[in-house]
Amino acid sequence: MSAKLLVYGANGFIGEHVARAARAFGVPTVVAGRNAWKLRPLAAELNVEARPFGLADPRRVAEGLEGIAVLLNCAGPFKHTAGPLADACLATGVHYLDITGEIPVFEALQSKDAEAKAKGVMLMPGVGFDVVPTDCLALHLKRRLPEATRLRLGIQTIGPAGLPPGTQRTAIELLDYGDRVRRNGELIRPRQTSTISVDFGEGKVDVALVPLGDVFTAYHSTGIPNIEDYLAAPPALRLVMAAGRLIAPWARWAPVRNLLLMSIRPGPSPELTARTRTHVWGEVVDDQGRRAAARLHGPEAGVVWTTATALGAARKALGGLAPAGYQTPASAYGPDFVLETEGVTREDVA
Image (cartoon, rainbow, N blue to C red; front, side, top):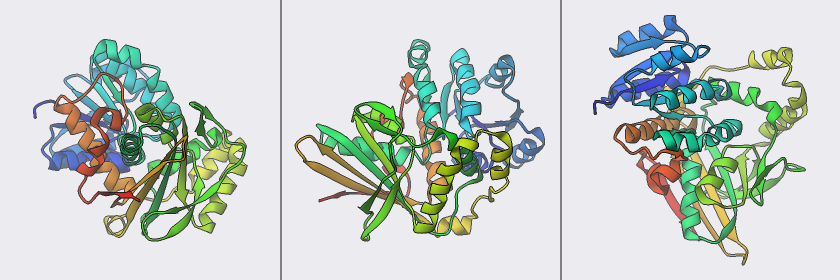
């Protein structure tokens, strides 16, 4: 494999994990980001090229992509980075990937679909967790029940690992965006939040409605017009989520947002991620009431699973599997792509 991968945001928590994994797999890698003083020690350790550059000057960004075949953006919040990097990719013929779960980013990149197809460039945001496991499970269920009109997805994490710092920051930045579900093909704000019971494999637990990226990506992958995302949340976490909804209108003000950003915790250690597992549940229903359900079981989501799927997608794109235009992981690589990650299993539920 001679085509080069550029990992932007390699000086960040997840970006560094991805860069190290890419190097371990022998992928020709360039590390990039805005902070040269953080980037260069990593490049020296991995014996790879470092390209420090910001995103304010489009010409400088395009220069940073010279000789690159695939860009993997790990620098969130992606509402600030996806646009400039995707535009540079379109200008230079480089395939664009990122690990976002931000619905506005999916919408923005999907709007560039025609341009990307015309230029032979793939735009595939959401190659981490979320979206790869849920997107692949959604398409798997759609193939089991082709006439499905309703999709519900749920996520459960068991173990001590918390969220990576970038995910915490993105959640704070998107507080004012609010909840979203898909109804009859349209993204809407639900009138009220809801809780349902889901069996992830060891008995039913309560899950709460959350605005994850699948309400956009799974619609693109499956065409199912009604989609909801849920998260297994103990009472204490549900209180935090409720508090977040209350303060959401004020989160757009910089002083409030900066105060919240001060609460961001460091990323989980390898010991904590090793003790954490993630479960994904999905169910589809058609207009006759027929149902199909399935579950995925895999490693810790924020670091381990995200690193594996992001690098897996990047390696496929470097190998020439990069259909032009806006893509989701499942639309590009099929429902079984998620099973390529070590330790991931899938089961259909009666």
